[in-house]
Amino acid sequence: MKTLVVIGSTGSIGRQTLEVVKAQECLLVIGISCGHNIELVTQQVDIHRPRFVASLRKDPSLQVCFPRTRFFWGSKGIEELLDAARPDLVMISVPGVAGLRYSLIATEVSGRICLANKETLVCGGRVFLDAVQKNGVELIPVDSEHSAVFQLLEGDVKPREIFITASGGAVRDLKKAELQEITAAQVLKHPVWSMGEKVTIDSATMVNKGLEVIEAHYLFGLPQERILTFMCRNSVIHGGVIYEDGTVKLHAGVPDMKIPISYSLNHPERRPMDTEFDLTSESLLLEDIDEDKYPALSLAREITGHHARQIAYNAADEISVEAFLAGRIRFVRIFGIISSTIQRIDLDAPTSYNEIMEIDRTARIIAEEEVLRCSSL
Ligand code: MG
Image (cartoon, rainbow, N blue to C red; front, top):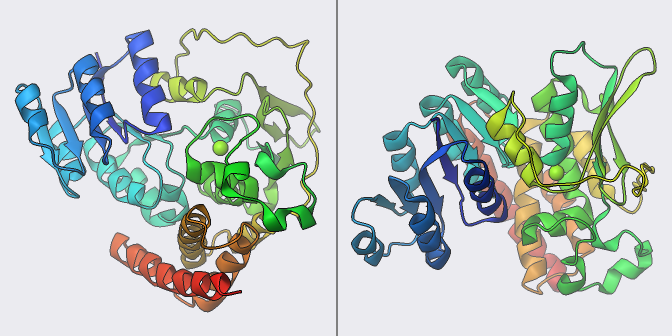
């Protein structure tokens, strides 16, 4: 049986990955890693009995409970775990730019990366793709829209265009003026998907779709103008490809992350899932996205392919979403902070992981200054 390591096993994608593996009995989980959720990781170790566990928070009592498991602690723990486990597959399901480090190591120690971490491509850019190519590792996207396009493109000629869809998040039915006073609790009520806090806020600003356009640019090697975006309110259509002869192939199905997770683990096979999709009860409707209401999407298009700006876009978003969740800034300020940070950053494209992280740090400092400016407004 092939072996799997799940990086970020206590997050939304990580938990669902372990559920899929348990239900399908398709892989042997030999390693899991978490940040601070010791309670949940203890349950997961108890169920899956992995040989290796990494945890950011040190808790020696775990080693006492599970003497046959080898534990790694602290910020270097995940790297040590990957090196010790050398699994067939790695699921990268941590959020944020931290995922890039683990994805890069995974290219050296594993045969397949199941990638749920957008920042690996947005911030890693060519540096990451070169590592994938050099090590001959398979890269399978887990992001639902990219999984959809990946599945549609397989073994097919290059399309004229591809598209990914957006639900519009929790604010899609509010007018632009109504966004001024919206609270974090309101934005966190996503209409379709159940996801982590960061990505739920990113759905409402459409920064998420912006990151996904950049992600698609690197995954599928297309310029941003050939990566279209549409609103699909029920998230039943995830993506599609459009050919020169006018043919459109759609990828549709139940909006359930377990489906792209399972696909990434089992590709090129498909395993049965207990999801029923009733074709006659769901509307298959795409709408244009109001870019005036969602300026973060247009901004992402402008910077696609500008590696340093992509890193700044992501870093400024992480800082401003955190500030919004902490009640320091209003929702509508997120875009301005990202935009100002990008304008203030003037750096060449990075050629290494260290240069990437240097730009990330600089961008975070600038974004923090912008947050302070906004919070006094
Ligand atoms: Mg997505």
